Length: 607
Image 1 (cartoon, rainbow, N blue to C red):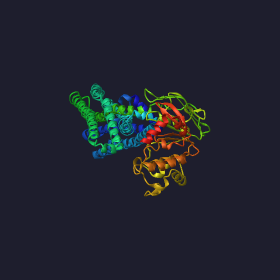
Image 2: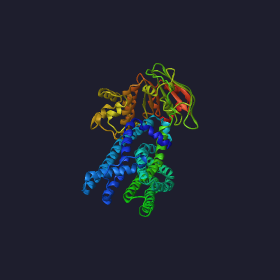
Image 3: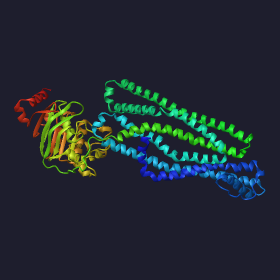
């Protein structure tokens, strides 16, 4: 129930719908009980015409309320019908129909209002979950499978709606239906109702035994669903490689193994769930059978109960079975929902390690430069950077070079605060970046990565991501600086052309120039280029490099370079090895030193 309470917090904005649901459920439960009680006078009219009440009865207290109501209705029917018994029968039938009509009307209204609450909670959980997914650091997703996260925001949230939120419909309606029905049953026969109470706990205990393992089995089903969604996501992302290496059968085997486990877990879960309905129905009929025997004895042998009251009593007893079954089904729902809610809340309650201080600085200007002071950082156990120091003055271009794994991209991740340093300090204009708002920090920076991350949208919207509400002229100007305007103009719909999933309708060079245009449009004072040309052919590289040089003009730049030919004009070139600086200086100064940088240049020249 702990998870159920946490999910209920999302229902607060929709409480008015909850109150309306409760109000109409109370009326439904009341009319549900009265509709069966109203059968007694109808049966009396049909089978006991000799028991007509000719004089209006007198109310003598709560102990005789049942007899008073029965006699009063009988009196009214007798007064209305006179000597025509059919008129009395029509009146009583009309009363029963009236009660059943309003019972169903109130049931519809109760369900109508709870729909807004259920769907509102579903919407808010999804929104909150998406907001959290975007807010959590990149490091979180190095441990989580994307498919599992997708499963949580889709099927797990739906499971919460089907299980937890369907319980909201039952919380008031079914218990009240049982309560009002029991009150009338007590009114008809206390002895018979007490006899029923002996069997209800036994039936409840048997049903609870079935539901005990549902949460664990449901958890297995949802985890496995996340697993095969991850396989689908990875397959779609790497389809080119899968086909090139003829690995279709291998991936199919992995996927079919996952769906087989899902099949087995689902069968266990559903079979256990399906056992609940027939078990509950049999136990209910068992209670009805015992009632028929015990109540029949009271009518036929003891003469302590009249036949019409007994028939109505049996209707009331059956009226308890449906809500009792719904409550037992809901208890299974809560167990299933617990597993889904646990998985959803795990993300919602995950603390973001890259947080903000209580009153962060909203820094909107860049005046002096960037400093890394004694910075040490590790992704897991081994340090990637150790006691690292670097100065990037305003207006300077600093290039980071070195072999793979030397820590170049790590510096880009730390400056943008995708990760936080373990030790040391990073400052902009002497202000620790941890004391700034993440939004203002990233507003100062533009990022162009090796992999051009584009979205399944138009060219215009992909470039416009760099600046909200950018005009068409601004977008075209940014594209011109990025050497992208010419090829965009040749596309079927120009700037309104959809570029496909991840921009796959474009070449590598075209995608990269769109990424540069996006960064140009943002017009930040600091540019971070993470191996922006390493994946391109020579012609594309020339166009992209020209675009980068235009973009870097009068800007502070941190350039992570794989191809050394692209960074010869940098003010400072920093050579890294295993997270430490081994050399730094201009291109000409480093060549004169005849050290690590010159070796890297020679190796690339030979290549």
